[in-house]
Length: 414
Image 1 (spheres, rainbow, N blue to C red):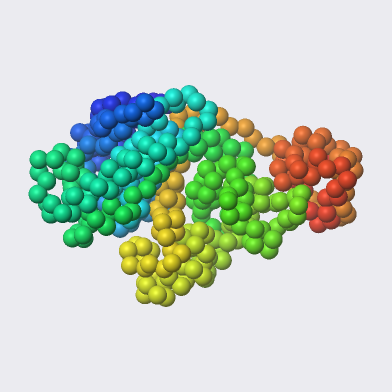
Image 2 (cartoon, rainbow, N blue to C red; image 1 turned 45 degrees about the vertical axis):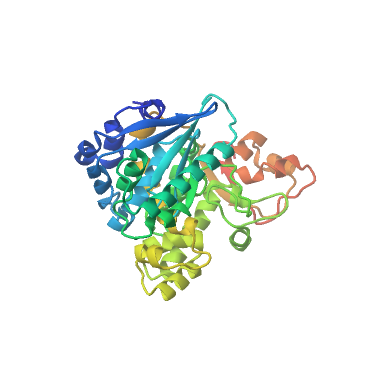
């Protein structure tokens, strides 16, 4: 069971009843029993696969369902959420899914890169570019043919996949929106291993503000709970806290960056969710979207879109900055919740460790690293394991850890 999903992807034409049962539930699995992956060609470094499913499968993907007592998937987001569930729990790091940014559920092909044992794989950009161009041209021809493509198997497959879209210009419009998305399966599994030691402490931060614990899992959407995550726009830590937010609530200087501490970051993330929920009128879909787009950006979307319904805003609001990332953020969150809820089935055994029991203490005076170790009678390794934001500081012998810094100290070594 541990490797069944990945094994299915590498099989050229394998029924995926087990896969869909895990992702859609036993009651719907039979509708997907005829689905299988078909090889659509190959080159030296990759092969191309597509999903072949009956009509009933595509219809079933649009059904609403509950994930937890606080969060459910509405009909209007079901297909979108289904796509991200596959990205998080099925497709791996060697898989690049060519799909539409306008309708993410439209998966035209998966480029599977060979050599899965390689530790570092470069994105097969040229291959993806060529395959995307092929599908763009194919969609443009489909628009011109106006439905008269019964003898072209590739066109028939795509037409069936797009049957739920009523736009008469859908083929040409979708042709302009193709992009690739890398599978995240291995990254999510590694994140679960990193998350395990911090889980009780992070959940406690959300409990303090009487927030659903589900919200703490936004860290997996933001970074796959990668403890070293740092974005090109300067966001850092598992919760990807932006610099302007970090400076408002946390200690940030050239040496210490508290955004690197998962527990401190969770504390700030919980506060942001609390504020978002208040600002956006008590609507969790909007509050979660606000974590990515900013609460006032979402408030502006509500004003211009004339609705508090996120599905309506996604379909009708075209604000300049309300793009692919913002429109998919809540769907990604729901998909991640589902994936983590079924982690045992999807990923198998997850190795985990635990943090030593600790207490938090505010430094009453600034200290050099060696003085801090002497003051509290702890080793450098213990301090760094409990305070990942201090790792850089502990290497600077002349740096003074500032007064007011909140340090975690082991109960058994203090």
